[in-house]
Length: 166
Image 1 (tube, one colour):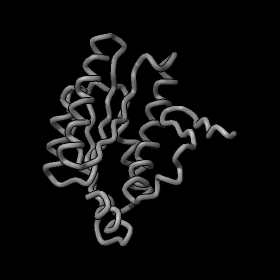
Image 2: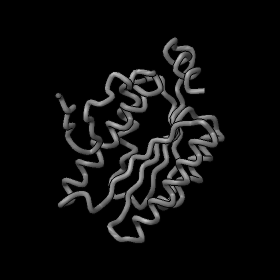
Image 3: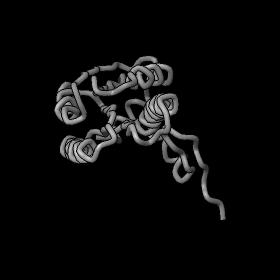
C-alpha cells in the first residue's frame, strides 16, 4: 500500500491526506507547527484533525482518521513526569503500533516528555522542533525520499548529532 501511495504521490496523481491527533493535556499546540510544515512542503495536502483530552485517547482518534481514509497519521502527545504518566504512554503507544500493523498506515508518534527539559523555554523549543522535523520526515517517507538520510544522526527535538565516521 505504501508503495502505491509513493508512486501516485510522486506522479502528483493524488493529494495526500494526513490525519492529526493532538491533546488538550499538551502545553504547546505542536500540531500547529507540524501543519504549517506539512503545508510548506506539500501545499496541496489535506489535513484532518481530531483533538482528544489525553494520550490514552489517541489510538481511538487515530483509528477514526484511518477509517476516514487518511494516508498517514501524526499523533502529538505530551507526557507528564510521573511513573503513571510514563506507563500510560507505553500502553497507549502500543495501541498506536498495533493500529499501524492492523491498517498498514504509518502513524508518527510525536511525543514530548515534560522531564526531558530543564525549563519551559527548552520544553517549548523541543516541542516545536520535534513537530516540524517529524512533519518533514513524514513527507519524505511518503515520497520514498527518507532513505538518503539513514544513519545521519538526525534528531527530532534536539540538534542533529551527525553520523559516526570511521
